[in-house]
Length: 464
Ligand code: 2PG
Ligand code: MG
Image (cartoon, rainbow, N blue to C red; front, side):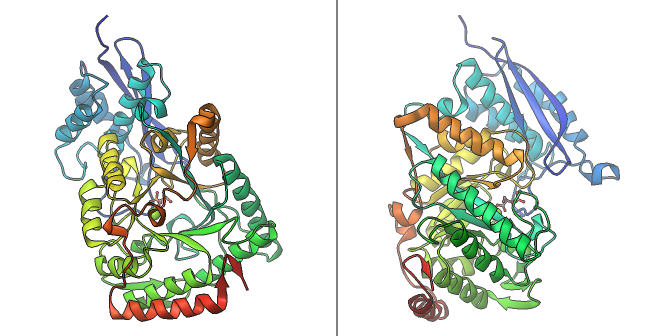
C-alpha cells in the first residue's frame, strides 16, 4: 500500500481562553487519518516573534482571524495537497517559503502554527501513535518537571505586579503526579492567605491568583507563607520560579516598576533580583531583563547562572540562531520553547534541539491565551525538553495539559524517568555556556552582598 499524502486542510475560527478568536486547522490524509492544530496567543510578546494575522477593525476587539483562515483555505491548502505528512521539515519549509516574510506576517504565525501542528497530529494518527511517541521515536522518555504559577501579574493581570509569573517548582517530587500534589497544596494555601488578608480578587489570565500586593516582593513573601502554611518546607518541598517578563516594563537598560513607582537601571534591577535569590529559594528566573538588554542578561548569568536557571523567552523567541548566539555570549542558560513564537513545529524543535545540544535547560511553554489543546505536553516529552510551563493550577485550558501529562506518565510507568531538577542547567553542566563566573565589577559586588544576605537571611531551604 502506498504511503498517505495530505488530502485536505480545513480552517475554522474557534475561541481561546480569553474569549478571543483563534485559528484551528484540520488536516486529513489520503488514508483517512486526521489531525488538528490550534494556535495559542501571547499577551507579553517578544518583538522578534512570528506575528499573528489579525483582522483589525472593530469586531472582537480587532482580534478576528478571517484573513488568516482565508490564507489557509486557499494558498496553504493548495500548497500542501499531495505532500508527504511524515516529512515535517519539508512541510514547514514549504509553509515558511510560501509566507515569504521574516516574521510570518503575510499568512500569519497563527495560521502557520495551526497548520504545522495539524500535519504533525495527522502523521501521528496515521501511524496510530500518540503524538509524544511519534515525536520521541526510540529515544528514552523523560517526563518534564512542571513549573506552575501561583500568582499571575504583568500583562496577564492589569499590571498589578510588574513581575509576570510567580511560580512553584517541587524539587523533591519523584513523579509528575507528586509535583502536582505539592502545587495544589501551595496554590490553595496561597488563595486562603489572600482571602484572609482581603486581597483575593479572582484569577489572572493563566489561572494564578490575581495579585493585589503593594510591592513585587510581597508576592514572594506571600508565596513563602503559602508554602509553609501548606506544611511544606520552602526550598526543599517547594521552590520558586519567576518570569519577570522585563520587556514589558523596560527598554534601553532602564526599568519602570509601576507598582512601586520607581525606576531602576540595569544594575539596580540586577541587584534587586540577586537579593531576592539570596532571600528566597528561587531556582529559575525567566526574562530578568528586556529583550534588548544583552548586557543585563550577560552580567546576570555570569553572576548567578551556576546556581539558578536563567531563561530567555522574549529574548530568544524560540529561535535556534538566537539560542546559539546566547550560548556564545553566555547571556542565559535556558530557553523557553513556544511553537507559535517560531511559527512552525520544525523551527521550534530546532530551537529546543539547539538548546539541549548546548547544555541549556529547555522548557516547552503554553501561552497566556490557550485552548483545550494539549499538544505542548506531547511535544515536551517527544522532544525530551525536561521542563514544562503551562500557567497555573486552575481553569481547564491549563488543567487539561497537566492532566494529559499525568496520563502519559501513567502509560509509560517505569519506562519513563521523571526529570526532577536533573534537566535544569545547573545540573546538566555539559557546556561552557553555563560555567560559573563573575561578570562586571558592579554585578560582582552585588553577588558578594547577595552571598552575605544569604548567610543572614536564607539558608538551607528555610526562611528565618
Ligand atoms: C510568557 C507567556 C506564558 P505570553 O511570558 O512566558 O506565561 O506569556 O503567552 O503572554 O507571552
Ligand atoms: Mg515569559
